[in-house]
Length: 323
Ligand SMILES: Cc1cc2nc3c(=O)[nH]c(=O)nc-3n(C[C@H](O)[C@H](O)[C@H](O)COP(=O)(O)OP(=O)(O)OC[C@H]3O[C@@H](n4cnc5c(N)ncnc54)[C@H](O)[C@@H]3O)c2cc1C
Image (cartoon, rainbow, N blue to C red; front, side):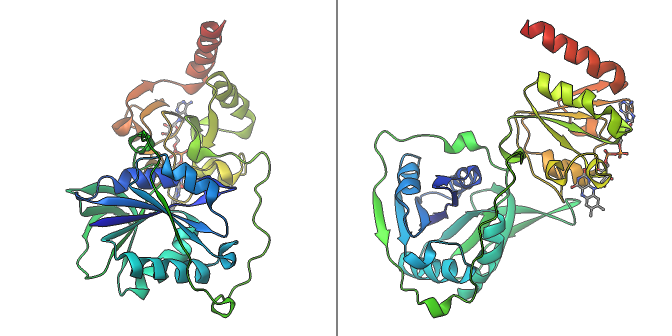
């Protein structure tokens, strides 16, 4: 049994979500060999990075027409590689790019795409959330072809995939046959995020603020707490809907999925749509004046109090600890 792990890179560096997908691939039924796949026109740097991780081998899928991402180009290249390798599983991080092309790729093999998986049980049972996280469904692959799976950001621990090998894994090249006429889209300029754009998905500490903060004028209080903790500031949806913080800071089912070591929820009730975004957090601390707030059901530590009393005290304590 072999597993093809399709990595995604940006600027020559493999994205964190790809290593979480490696941690997921390592949970698949053994024995298997994990072959990491890097795709592009020139993949030397990401291939070398992948070879240093806990994979059996690395495959460089290279073609000039793969210099820029297109769904047609990636589908054509991976279709040929998968036909060549005949793996039991093809695993992806659940990125926007993967959502764009992986279902079509699975269709080429007459298979379904099991997307946004949050857990793998017994090596072959996949869990995913349904109806905004209110239900979970379990899935087992029953087709004859490969099983196509993508992995939700934050659902699998990065550290599990971080076992570096003594010797780098072997790297092989695969050159697909792609004709320019196969590619129906012409990529525009790559989207460049504004320089201040926050990367909540990679943040190790996050202070999340909710409607308990009452007004935009009170936000400097939680901003000061985030600074004292060297944390990123995030928010529940109403805060972003009100325009008090930009949408890029929203956490939850229609915002970002985060997986920090510490998530400090300040004045957040704990609606399911928010919780699905933070469940990968290693430690959740909640400050809420309502002892029955649902956030306390998942919090590791809870502070039942008025945030306007607790937050200034916390900032002072953190400053004193640093002094
Ligand atoms: C399709 C859909 C998608 C959604 N996507 C998201 C999403 O991605 N992210 C998201 O967050 N929500 C999302 N929501 C909204 C979600 O259902 C909740 O409405 C939202 O999360 C509530 O935000 P909140 O906890 O800040 O506010 P509230 O639910 O109003 O909670 C405020 C909390 O603050 C506490 N509080 C008030 N004053 C104080 C004080 N002085 N000190 C301490 N505590 C205090 C209160 O006790 C309360 O628990 C979505 C909803 C839908 C329908």
